Amino acid sequence: MSFTDFLNDYVASNKDAAIASLQECLRIPSVKDEETVAEGAPFGKACADALTYTLDMCAAAGMKTVNLDGYVGYAEFGPADAAEHVALLGHLDVVPPGDGWTDGPWDAVIHDGRIWSRGTQDDKGPTFAGVHGAIALLQSGAELRHRVRLIFGCDEESSWQCMEHYFGAAGQPMPKLAFTPDAGFPLYHAEKGSYTATVTRPLSEMSAGITAFTSGLRPNMVPDKATVTVADASVVSHLRTALPDATESSEGTIQVTGVSAHGGAPHGGVNAAMLLATGLATATGDAAWTALVELCDCDGKGAGIDGQDDLTGPLTLNVGVVNTVDGLLEVVINVRYPATWDESVLQRSWDNLNERGWTLVQFDHTAPLHVPIDQEPVKTLLSVYRDHTADMSAPKTMGGRTYATCVQPVGVAFGAAMAGDPEVAHRPDENISVERYLQCIRIYGDALYRLANVAS
Ligand SMILES: [Zn+2]
Image (cartoon, rainbow, N blue to C red):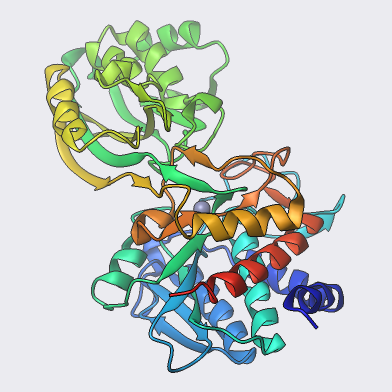
């Protein structure tokens, strides 16, 4: 029996268990949580629980598993004497659910042929499809030239300490070839460079009546809520006029609602911090609020760093978190710049932000990714995808960033969204169709099989 036939049979006879195991993992609310950080749980209890659950499942299937202090873990199988391994890198942490869900974000209910929960697309669904594809590969007894390793990170949505730990303190080797199921098909062979930066500027006397401004949960999400508390009655009344759609939870506490979206595609959202800052600029006359509105420009024009290239398109800028701290406006921006640009964009950014009155407090940078399409693993993964779908679409590029940047130049993002799938990652009512999930088990199983047999 060919491995493809085995895989098809495996999915047909194990689909209920494959779905149930994903549901169980989805019900673990693995949002980073500083309050429950402990030894072995650097990102909080739920992230650690999701990792333990997943590793236990792999161990029960006969894989060797290693938990690297709760930051990240891996499961491995294949010839013990093989010098190299190929890897799937997925993540088990998720962004906070936000509001607007039809079903509970942690219920993982199935209706209309879909599983509904935070993490179904990003990234537990695709990661578990990889896990079950790998279990099928292990059970098939197919011969492998390289070992197969499944790597499960727990801090992808925040600060990537998982991968820092994996390749840093934990000293894990680079894979021979790798993919991350954390984007779309056919595959993404180039990703923009990115940086997250915290900048501040002082508020003027005109904002003295403002006690607190808060908006946003993560640098990589467009904030859908912004709240301001105002002690000055005249500012409150100005705000009511400037923002007729705002709600007032108590005297002087005013909230506006925008539309959340992924920080790599901020044009798809409506930034609530920008909406509220627009009102505050009118109500107070403080230029700091006008500067914040300008900074919110998704093309980076307000930061003086707009531009594009032919490979990956325009730079994007997301204002993800805004707070007032000790008379300062503190803003966290997430910028994704074209893959063919070099690191001089960083200095240019700091200079231009400085010129506009912003002070850089800290930043975190990731270089762009570019794997040529005539190289592995692009060649193999593209043929796997085409064999399973008959879709001959060309490889794509994106605003990134995925784990592929941690394993360049031997890794790319491969799946799991396909053309026509709803774009619901980081949004309410995130879901994956049961059919897509099962199809991905076959695709990822085959991908691991073929990569594990690529000639050295
Ligand atoms: Zn993801």
